[in-house]
Length: 199
View (cartoon, rainbow, N blue to C red):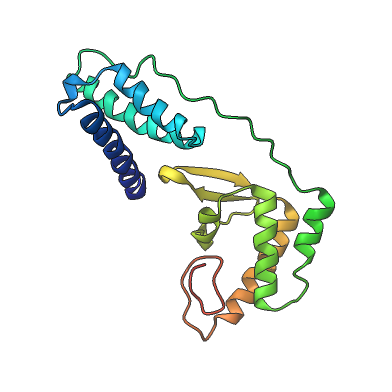
């Protein structure tokens, strides 16, 4: 099931395509569309210098539309079958060195709530590679002895191992979190602002 945000995005991207075929080709019926129109739509964005990743996002939405049209027998064939994605350049991701990772984690030296929270957040990110949204939405029951249960995109659940050092600091954080919010209202997410609000 798609998220509300994804659906809105698809609606916007499909609207671009509909506007294009109406304005450029006078097409108002789905049955009038041909693969050439879809290629023309994509070529227009290429000529304007849009990034391949953006163009491929548009194409993905258009492909979904025509897959649906074919499934529901509005079109006799899948119009996007031979339309390939635009080639995207391979991006080389420069990672942190072990020294840089250690420096980033050790930047938070204090033993107060915020310092320990920030240190643990950095450790969890470096150890697990989970998304920011997965970390900010994490609840206490998702923390197990040697792993996290992560609720990811599309409501998918996965098990993510954690190393013993992260477990040790996480225990320390949960203890200070408990005492810090003992007399303050707090949401039930693991990582909270100093006012007990979700990050």
